[in-house]
Image (tube, rainbow, N blue to C red; front, side, top):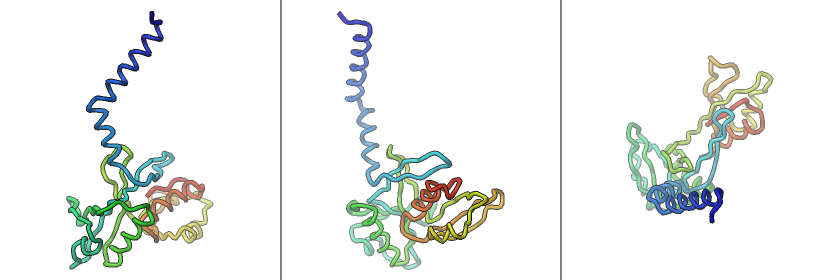
Amino acid sequence: MFTKWGRCFSVVVLIVACAAGSPYAFAAKAAKAAATGEPVHYYNGASRVDVVLSLDELTVEAPAGAGAVGAVVPGASAKAIEGTTAQAVTLQSKSADRAALQQVADSFKAKGYTVKAVLRTTAGGAAQYLTNRLSAKFPASAKVDAVLAANNLSIIEQVTYSENTYILQANGGLLASLDAANSLYESGKAAWATP
């Protein structure tokens, strides 16, 4: 004879077993599998946002007269991103890590392309395109010029409606803005920083 807790446990097991075989469970697994790559994060204020760096996708904007992306990176295919001049590039095979993806990006940059990394939510959501810009708010006591020099950043604009707040450009690799924003915030050099 089952006790009250034994029956409750049996019902939970039955629900879990049914859900595991349901089409909804398979769709969730497929969505999670779609977001494969290297886990990275950024901050939205004080909230950490976990995303995945796609290791087989980039976005590029071609210079005038540029050839097909497949001529720059053999096997790559491109599709126009609606409402922009950019193209979503899918690599023939997944890069081993962010350093290998950077090498692919460098191949495009050498031909004059503007290149952005693709980030996706861990649930397989829509693509987010990482630019080389970030925003940050520094404490009043911060020596902004020294912080910028130490992080290879330059000022694009000082925001007029928020004291000590800047739009910055990261001068570096594909993930430079993400790495710089995280470094500024995590070290306490900025009140907040986000790519």
